Length: 234
Image (cartoon, rainbow, N blue to C red; front, side, top):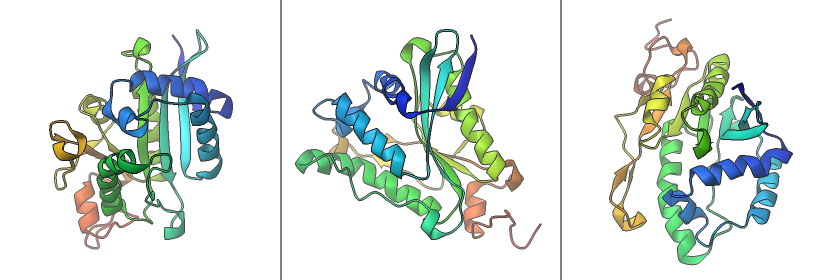
């Protein structure tokens, strides 16, 4: 069962997002983002524009080469250039929503955006996992691990941290490739916003081997040194 992770191409948009929507069909985020259902034709055109203009975005697919099918996908933001002009820009909102639907969705996403900006700012180099999905019919084959390892390999080559907001179900996978849960900050989706019971979002960071065991909090508290020096040590 040869599985391989490859860059996704424009022709892959539909099969890549077939996997995404199958994996997340029962997740609240899909209802928030697409409250009236997903117009897949319009979605595909929107993704084409997104891929063409977002210079930090890298979408990858996991391909089962025996059957020629996309069985997993992940989207990564890779901020490898130094300087504020090359960093992450917090979104203005969700452009395709209006009224109360827009307000509700952004009330969930805005705290996540704010937390990301608080932790990494606009000019730090890091790798961000924004989404990962595995075809429900192909779970427990190591697809998620391969997708996660792709990002780990890139971050290790760059010598930069990784960040993601995990689900409870994804914790074990992320921990298995070296992510650790942040404990000095908390992000909670509140019932008054989501209509569901309060739920804490696990915030996960993986420091590169170049950090030599330095935790994210230690790194942040000491000024985010690119060389991971602490208090003048080498």
